[in-house]
Each structure stands twice: as structure tokens, then as C-alpha cells.
Image 1 (cartoon, rainbow, N blue to C red):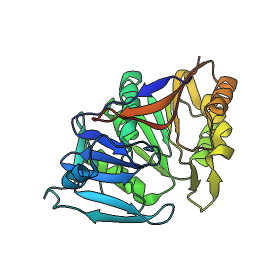
Image 2: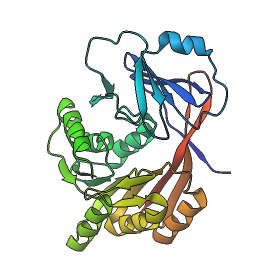
Image 3: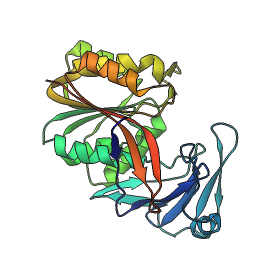
Image 4: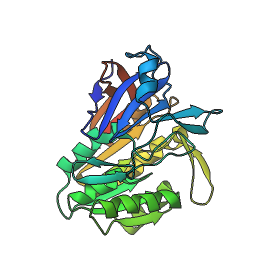
Length: 281
């Protein structure tokens, strides 16, 4: 049976409840209802209570898109939340996301422990930059790579609102950047990867994580300095734990593999994917 890593809530984020393929979350002063296929169990609270406290609900339409419904008046201030001293800006999108994956908090805490000022960090598939900003807050030299320009702009705003500067922004396909970095002889103390199940690169090239997984793990092993750490998350149901284990042990000496979980305020356990932490000797 796989080991479980539980990611904790913090003062500005709370997974209140989950069930009936939905989850109820608090982000600062805003409460949302979003679809969640892993919440296949019954919720801990009556649906009526969910509806009473939720400000926003995402109603899916088709497999990916949908629309947000406002259930009650939103707080007047901008939608921002804090993680320690850092600021993350949130907003609704057409794909149910709001700009942050709070289950990653366990990794942010590990980044804070692993990095020291002047160390080099590479964040691939970097999204809105939470991990990048956490790394920069420790004084690391951070390179942030994403193939979507709008997400890089969002990440830059998060950096500025966190009173930080000098993250290196790269608009490019993650694998192509990693290959170029390897050719140049660049190496890092920490590499963070949070690849989606599928994606489209900066030049519209399509790929699937199950086809790219070993290549990503292998190139990370070559880009890491001795004592370096790879943090990799996968959410795709097509990627199995045993596959990650096989690829990781093929390219790394020390491997920690677990399932990523969170517990709701109402006591429900919910699965959020697979988590790899691999160390370079």
C-alpha cells in the first residue's frame, strides 16, 4: 500500500468539505464550490449548508469548460490570499481553476527547508508561480518556465505583490527549455515539476504526460547538482505509481514516492495525485 503525504491547510485556505464529486473551499473570505472527481463519497455537511456559505460555484459544461455562478455578494476587496508572508492573486477561469493548487503547500514547505540564499531553482510547468515565489523568498536564483504568456504575467503580479523581484521568466515549452539548459551545462539545486495530464507548448505542440514522464525524470537527474532535489507531481489517472517508481529509481539514487492527500474540516480524506521527491547523490 502506498505511503500517504497529507498536505495541511493554513490560515487563508481551508478545504471545508467534499463529496458528490464536488469540494467546498475557503480562500481568504471567499468560499467556492468546484467539481472534484476524487470526491466520490458522501459529503460531511448537508448540501443546503454548502449553498448557504458559498459565494461562487463552478458549474461544468462538457469535460473541461463551464461557468461560474455567484451565490452571494462577494467581499469588496481584491481576491488575494496569503501563504506565510507571500501574496497570491486569485480569479475565476473558464476551467474551474482559480490560480492556485493549495494541496501543493506541503511542497512549498519543503522548498523553504531545502533552499538557501544563492541556490539555483528551476520551476517547470510553473503556472502562476507559487513555488517560484516561495523559492525566491529564500533568496534563491529562480528560473520560471511556462508555455502560457498570461500565466507568466499572473506569476509576475504574485511576485510583485509579495515584495520580491528578479525571478527569471521563460515563455517556452518546459522540455525544450530543459534540453537547452542541459546543452549549456546549467545545473540546479532544486527542480520543481507540476506537469498537467496533457498540454500544448508555446508553439502549439501537443503532448501527454504518460509519453513524457520518463524523459522529464531523466533530464531532471542530469540537470541537478549533487545533493539536489526533484519535486514532481502527477495528476493523470493514466500514470501509475509503479511507473513513476520504476523511472525514478532508474535515474535517481534516493527516491521518496507517495500519494498526495488532504483531509477536509469535516474529516473526509481526498486524493490529489502522486508525489515524487528524488534526491541526487
